[in-house]
Figure 1 (cartoon, rainbow, N blue to C red):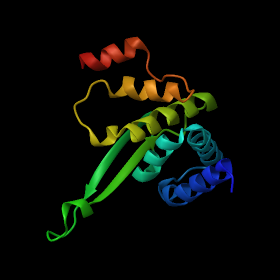
Figure 2: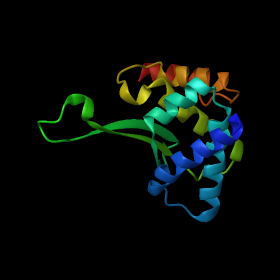
Figure 3: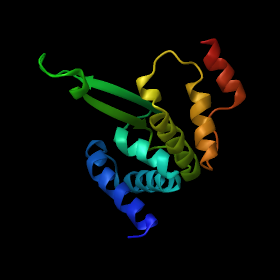
Length: 153
């Protein structure tokens, strides 16, 4: 199997597990799935491997985009390295411009690849996620003015 076909098969396998949390009207579902596929197909192999390792789920809501990691409680006798992590990308599927949706998806995937969903208190995460998604060929989501405001908050 060539690399492109294998990548598409890997994306399909991930989507089968991730889509369980996606409840959308058919048009939004298709747009979101295409945006995710477009971004994931363009990732360098090492970044795609990091994404697959984190195996995030998708939850749709009206917040432009967020990533979080939740630790699920387990019995006391379970070793720490066996804790269940649920990694989530929150996306707004109602973004009407397809290019904007793709760039937002790329930005949020960059957070997952960078491990930002596990970090707290770093005020430069948005810039760094934009830097990475731009490296992959996507537009930045935050202007310099928006980034300055984030640092001031």
